[in-house]
Length: 445
Ligand code: NAP
Image: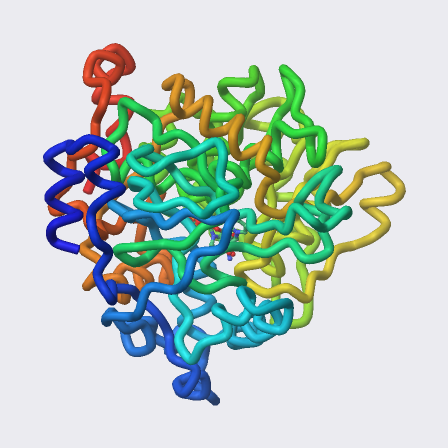
């Protein structure tokens, strides 16, 4: 792997890279099947990814005809890696075993270790016989929508495919490793002005936010829409704010510290709510919500922007959903993709039906949506929200910080990249877009 890394960093020709021998094994971050019960009986916050995530050598799997083997230069932490590493809501080995029953190549995934990671940037080393659009040497960003193109249900909106999966969460051989196995239709061109780590942190959360807000498959935001964004400097929210501003909407960002509020102002988000400072208590006890607190929150929104939000960008789940449904404008849309604080949701249905609101579900993005978002990033219209970078060896620590909400934006992980700042192919484009914009989240740490 050392020679492959040096060849990539020194910029060897594609043909030379394709001819380089592969090692027998590679470094990967994984959880073990035998550890799935290690946190039994503990509170979620006590379940520590530093204990369950291992970084060790694993063998290189066989490559299928529609797949590529990518030398991963950098990857990122997503919340799904936190879920896998704390074995909540269930151990992900059940997903691998289901994929393992599909066919011989599916069986490659059903191992006693699960290599995690659903983002990545890097260089293609090998392609399967059926790959047409990509070749060794191509510099790529990877999205995580893993679909079977022989499945007829995958051919309208692939996110609705019956066997749609998230790579590195519901499949093995994920991106938090020196090599990754991906389907060719997960590949996108690496943004030419970004470094490896800046290119690696976008695809999962940025594409999810794109589908939630921009796509006709979810909220389809229009110019002038007021959009309430929970966790507005988090992995999803940091892209959502940029998409709303770009699309002529009016974002209201909710965050939990003065530092995050300041970052939002720097991004151009004028309406900001610090939920900690305002001390909203939407739940008066674990079973009862307090409508007067929803009203206080709604009043604050009207004070800030003069109207109710046409779109509420939801993902905290149980803690906030009652408030989200309440404050959403008459005829408006609550778009949800997650439930970090609990998935058994309660809201007052009268506020939904009497005011003709709708709740729309959204999940990652189809290839077209992910590609469209990558295109915006490549054009410099959306900036990466990379705030800190860790070596692969410290993946457990990085996951722990995301689990405890101690981060902003996205945490990058260097896999084969020996240091930060490498991989920038178009420095002129970069200086035209501006270091200060590209590194807005990074400069703060
Ligand atoms: P993140 O980087 O941790 O950001 C989430 C933000 O939500 C935090 O910055 C925090 O902001 C806010 N938050 C957390 N708990 C909250 C609570 N109880 N009440 C209000 N706000 C709260 O995570 P992310 O990458 O944005 O992902 C968020 C969730 O979406 C995760 O559960 C993840 O698994 C899920 N997700 C789903 C998809 C999909 O395709 N379905 C894709 C990506 C992510 P403040 O503390 O500043 O308010």
